Length: 289
Length: 289
Image (tube, rainbow over all chains, first blue to last red; front, side, top):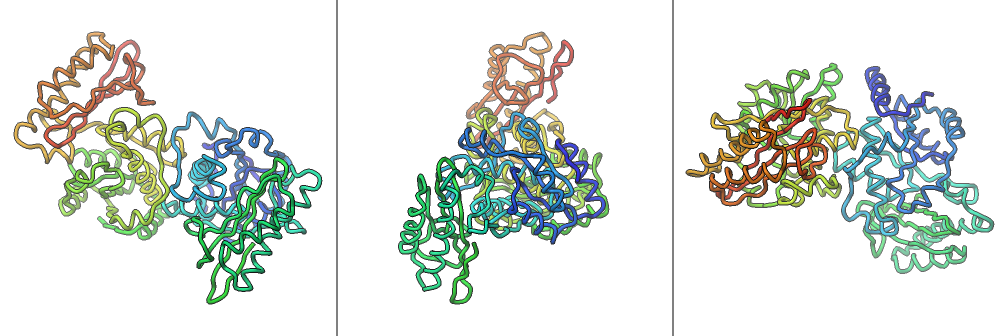
């Protein structure tokens, strides 16, 4: 497994693989890998010949500098896990390699008004800008993003379509701990009871699924039921519990063809998110979480 | 010469050329071709094996809908001129092919505050967004832009650098009519005396060069002298006469290592632009216009 730090060296390495007609797979990460990240690589391997993983804690997408400073990092552990998962090349640039007097940015209308966008101003501008940069550096045929960050995944799909990036995006299922908590690099920050209590996020999604299977599809019935369950987990603050359209990310009154039920809450100083995709197939709804 | 209307067909065509190890050259135009456009193709041919030209009057970059409606178009003439210049492939999409419910945009900080940016709000957002789309559709190795639209050329160079597009930008010299007027698709709109009077733009640049060769490098001396010459050409309105840094496009008090002297004025309802790049080489200044 090769580890590359500069953009020029990346262009050379990718050119070599392209000349050999290899299909390039790409997973963007901020490191501190867990099974969730590794599952993205496994999916990527099913579609491509050469696996690139980037590890870059992207300052531009952090609206809270303290969150950036405390974001967990362990590169040696990351390298070992990535190698075991079959990554062929790690791109590990530093800040100055990625951002030298940057003035250009990418943003998106409408789709950042709700969910994490309202609480994190500038976050998705930072995400879209760095992901576009990484796409141009890695030039992948396929890139896999996790459903865990559903707003990010949907917005990146929209950017790829709007700007005609010549690649396919795959959205991969959420990987969970045995008690249902969605895996996240931030889980390491959960202290004391918060770790156990945080499973209320998952339980609220299961409750929503139960209601949906009983024919209840109105947001004003589902959301209060979820709120009760999350409140019982004693979060420091509930950020949002929302039902939005999958394509537009705008709130809906009742479930449509494809919707997202998404939650965000603070446990101590740690902000956690979770979600479920609800798709109408025929007359029934299927929940994927 | 092939003419392609859809993005999918473009991706197939480009993939075929790439498989044959052809280096792709690209010139983006809004059609109504003149010798200026064709000179870009000639330069492109010196560096690449397969020439792609796009013809797309990009509504997103017109801040004035009337300017968009009256922008001159003549595709049959364009095809003949392009073929003669050695273009291999024309990409001619329609509006709906390029913009289907677009929400993503690219913009740039600072560099649009001066020159054409202040008079044309949203113009460069439209330019950057469509050029990024075209880069992703054509995937060129080299793309050539004209010095005539210097702010556009500098901003696109900055976008390519900031977003790491895997391609090289070449800025090509201005092509002029025999009396010095910079070639432009908009010149066809000039009525009566305006066509002759418009050469004052070019003459003002020559005056600036003359002053510079006499050691005068202060903006507050050069700009008034240029203003006198342009005013004598009786424009309906002078939009700006500015001296800016080439890299940042911010106004400078006196000529630096690399500066741009740029002018914009209306003759009748037609807005014309012209410029000169002034580079300090050793102790002397070289003017390219």
